[in-house]
Image 1 (cartoon, helix red, strand yellow):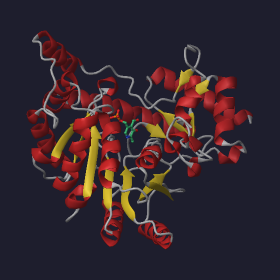
Image 2 (cartoon, protein in one colour):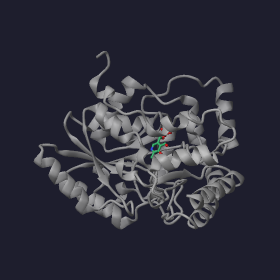
Image 3 (spheres, rainbow, N blue to C red):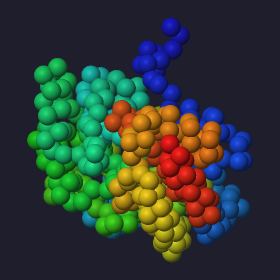
Image 4 (cartoon, rainbow, N blue to C red):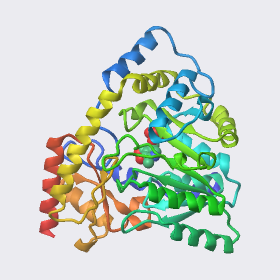
Length: 384
Ligand code: PLP
């Protein structure tokens, strides 16, 4: 075989596979892709354009622009974390940060506990690194528990697999569920008990509606065993600019930086300048987008509840209704909905086995489209 066996063993992303079907189809309303529908706030674009006019186009330091690292260190106090700019590394999106965090932490054969259902990159990136991905199911309420994690870790140990890291993502993609302090404490207790590192993907932190987001790194003693990941793709609609960051304790930070400097060198300079403007002056733009997501969430949940059971999302821009009672699998449901009613959603199975029986609906589309889409879903379910 010409390609690596590890890579060959990976399945293609279930989301991408599904969306190949609808490329170029104007007649379809998509609640599929997890991408904000707002343009990047003008003040951010303007600052980036201005930097280009000034000819600022070179590499930055491997760490990222120091002033941006300072802004992030200050900003994260909002989520309870006190850190120095020296703990902050600018990455090419959270995607890169997940990758280098795993590569920095894992030796081949070491285990990573990964929530299920979850964002699609955690498992493949663990496998490519040589780690062993072990899912911890969170259904039916989508909340992880200490008991479940401990029991999985003990089972792994019986097979000589030590759990080196645990990934958490809240507010969560695909469920929209977020974690209260008591849930974070359970995760922290697990990490301490098993001497594991927490990789906390907080990319939707700003889009928290039900309660204030708090970072797990803010809990007593947890900064030293947590790698916080966050970025600008979701909160500031900056998906195409590829800019995110990691906040990590010194030893893990240094290891991540070694990989980052060889594989990425630095995050795009123009995007870093945009990110700086976002943190300095973008709060109002963010609040406006957040208010609109909240309005859509309330509308969507109220309407869809007429026909499907759904847990009210605490954050992000996803709802994860239960479709099991229709008798269709999540893939059958999504395909039928697409072909018969021209609405695209993602089958829950794309997010791991325990996403089966659900569909993910992203309410990152304008109200008119959302209204039409939900009407079509309701009619579709009623027709089954
Ligand atoms: N983490 C989660 C939970 C996501 O939902 C996404 C994108 O959908 C990412 C990370 C990737 O973010 P970025 O655009 O910063 O690479």
